[in-house]
Image (tube, rainbow over all chains, first blue to last red; front, side, top):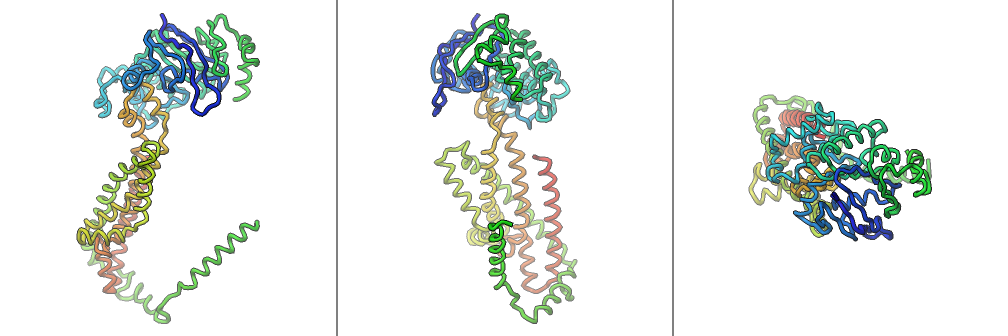
Length: 257
Length: 250
């Protein structure tokens, strides 16, 4: 069943001569693990941020769970965002708060503001946060300051923060771009495992084609803000990308690092 | 050396000589005699009068109290005005005039403010509290605005993305960053204010300065010596503790 749909989605940043995203028609089904690939500047990040409206798209329509969400504002928009987890490249944790507090932050849209502002969390919520941390191999870290953790651990905390939302969809914007290759693989494995266990749909931006081929069920290719590829991973190979982009994306990315 | 740095040194030297020309001692030959009485005489600075310890202690305590209350009041106002002055939180229509107001406040020295407040509320520590509080709002408000303007917005974006309200963004993303930095500048300001509070009494605004003024007027350098020792000890202890706490905060 379709969970998310975009119709003619477009985004032009104010003052920019070219649109960052041009009429993208896309549909994601429940439980799919979809990689969004393309060179930097292809519009991957803009696309993901339009989906939970961290950026407001300038054209087209958005549908989530069959309902149009294009022009949501205020309370309804907040409510939409509570059902969508977002994982950032730089983790976006509050480094001065504890790991546990950072995980609980995921519930801020779903619990009474007065209660959370006073720092009061139900036993059930705290237990769930602990359970998620244990599941991601961070049980000993819950009381540490978040900025005391390694990059891979911090990204797992941000995954736990997304999971505690009980989301239908997780958007992950280059979640492993700041991590070394072994850690990147470990984090992606964890993300894929929990997503499959919970039946969560994942859209993940990756600029490493090999990672996309290894983990994704389906691959969406963007170039200059236009959708140029949308096929199951089984129909995709590195050579399809050399064809689309006119160069070997993998080698290019490795050269840059 | 380049041509430019030659000019730099030449102008610097010239300015110093020009300024020093008028800075000569006015006492002439009597100078040495007076200096001897001041430092080493029977009632000189280096022969402190330890009988004075108890009034000095109470004067220092009052100075400390003035600094604590003055800094606290300034901190509260600075937090509010800092938010209004911060360009990323406020609007330009409010931010620009508030920043101008804060710099205007900064230009007025504590002693001048003390004299003005004494006219308003009468001599005593309350005038001192108002003078320190008012003056400190200028610097603290500016620093608070700078803290807010340099906020890391990434954690804030994360709270927006989970559907958090504004109050949650403030409480869970901004406040944990702002609080330790704000406390740190507040403590630093307190270190400055304890120094200021020890001379406020010279114009009648409470604290050890009053005792100091009387001793100086009476040429009782032994008493002045006791008072200076007291001020040095208190300022050093406060500086030390405050610096340790600040190192832990940030």
